[in-house]
Length: 207
Ligand SMILES: Cc1cc2nc3c(=O)[nH]c(=O)nc-3n(C[C@H](O)[C@H](O)[C@H](O)COP(=O)(O)OP(=O)(O)OC[C@H]3O[C@@H](n4cnc5c(N)ncnc54)[C@H](O)[C@@H]3O)c2cc1C
Image 1 (cartoon, rainbow, N blue to C red):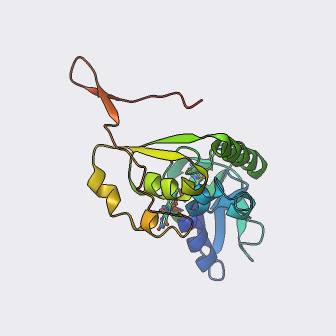
Image 2: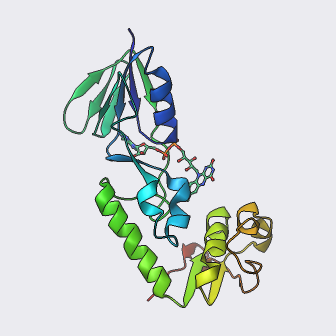
């Protein structure tokens, strides 16, 4: 039976590992202790019962295959070297290491317990805030603004291009917004030009 090492236990890696579990010797390598359903991350910032539901342990994912909690540090055609020093041989390697987003869009801790306390802390500071400033008005910020509406006095999206977000289906579709999510939204440039003409991100203390 062919040995398949899947690197990364996000949406892609989990799907491949599960699909091959019956027909191959599958090893899934993932440093986190649970799958993070990050699509729910923004809702988890305002809904107290959501964070715990975003983390799904890997222990029942595979019937035959195994999940190794480690990080791949080098990949060769015939195997994968892990941070622990272990080398996994493989007939096939699937690289599914995805992308990284800063917290809270994706969890930045390997342990579910630590991630849950990060989300809880963020949710409570967001709940205590009377005004929230969002920098960037793409789909993520638009979604967050819509979810934030019921508990914020005002939400500001800072972005150069207003038109990209007025069409956001996520914001329009929010059933939690008591009025249009755009009613008290303001826009401006995200970047401050420096003297030499280059730009640097605007940094604003939030507390
Ligand atoms: C807030 C938010 C909302 C989103 N909403 C949607 C949506 O509604 N619909 C949609 O289609 N998409 C959505 N996306 C995008 C979606 O989350 C990504 O497309 C998806 O996560 C990609 O899955 P992936 O498996 O490729 O990578 P990821 O989910 O990023 O998973 C990669 C995995 O690889 C692991 N990894 C990384 N490096 C290593 C290594 N060296 N060794 C071992 N493991 C490693 C990571 O720990 C991680 O678990 C959203 C994203 C965000 C942030």
